[in-house]
Length: 71
Image (cartoon, rainbow, N blue to C red; front, side, top):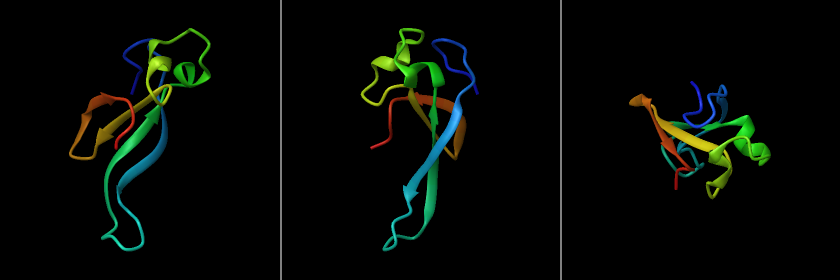
């Protein structure tokens, strides 16, 4: 998957969902990082996100890339 801003290959960073010990363990999606945006070196506009270079996808729509960090 590529960054829509700079074309750099996104790196899988983490997963999210109901994964705390008191929850059911369901993984809802994945968090991706653009290496250029995370570096904050003016090479990618995703560095302006509240969490620099972050994107996420839901497992049921893996082809739909969302900007930022899931709440």
